[in-house]
Length: 543
Ligand code: PEP
Ligand code: MG
Image (cartoon, rainbow, N blue to C red; front, top):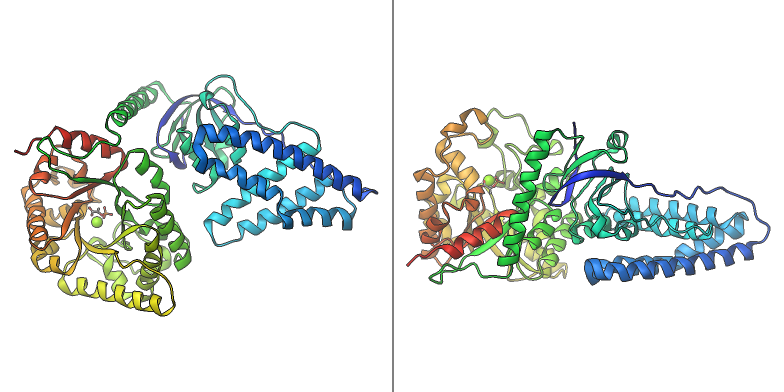
């Protein structure tokens, strides 16, 4: 049994046999030619054939993944006709007097390298697309059929990487899962797998390819991004049980999708979901969440080797806002320190980091970092319904400083003629006992509260959330924590401020009724808990 970690791009479990995807790599040799016109004509014929194939793939994708995601194949068709791409092929043939295959391969390498070197994640992912269309043209030049392949029994498809056209060309009914050694979660391959509802794990690393062969047993856990090769019986049994839970959740989805979060007596609550990156949006939409109650933005920093630029952050926030199409998105500003350390911040060692230099404290001490993030957030705000919230608040002064910083950023953007929305809500996390206790003073300063029960429990019960030795002393239903939440709820409503809960406790269905009685307005949970909470809410009668 061997375990590999990667990135799950579609949260579901598959158990089955491996089929190693064999790409018919067109091996390209450089040959000298004497008649450039004939080579150019071969390129034109190959392009026409490639366009015909892509048009058929586009039709298939339209049926299987819908118009939005099928668009990538229209883009591929446009890329084949791109002037720069074609000029490059033509000029290599004419100036070097070489064969068409070689000219296409060199053009492909050059364009792919150019895309890979770009700052923008979206443009980087286009590198795979240019390779995909070039391989198709090369294959058509050698008169071979493209590598589009079909397996005739249900298999887990494993590969170094998969091009979008390869992904979509499989017969969906025969694919249990996709696993790739490389790939990016923003690539169209990942997006297509997600939209084909096929469990997929990418980026498991090159080593994994040495451990697999056709027919070997594998478990793919798209929730956790894990792949287990040759699992033992016990593991298969455990994952079979998880598959059944997934199936139950799917049934729930069928019954509850689109239904209101409303109690029997008519009390409504918002049920949102939490994400840690742009990747999480698929799960949010699949589980029918009403919005995003917590986007842990620090993951953009954790996944980067250096401070993410304003542009990189803007792109990520914009993508999340656009994907949510007008539903509320609450993005929490940077919350690092404590258990989330980042080398390039150069933070000094602390004996007690959970109570140390973290979250909003870092932002207030490093205004340049804070300002970059706020600029990106406000610039993205025109693409949806944004709320910004600040973590680890303990005092009135801290709260006062945050909106002041927002105002400064808005002034700057106005002066630069950059648009931003004037409807951005600004809120704070209630995750320290101090914030809950002075919530009557904090409420008039903000638009909303969001209770971080993970930290609120840690600080109220003096139980380090990282320390597994004290697990038995952590009473997650401790009356002290619940009373602090209630105190914040009373003070929020007294000031016409809405209040949500975004810590893990929000997903605890044994507390849902109590939260509703406290008049909590929103519960934000991991995406798989949205529907179980909706089911619970709909069973409650508060009258
Ligand atoms: C919390 O503390 O409850 C919370 C939601 O924030 P995090 O878990 O990211 O600290
Ligand atoms: Mg917290």
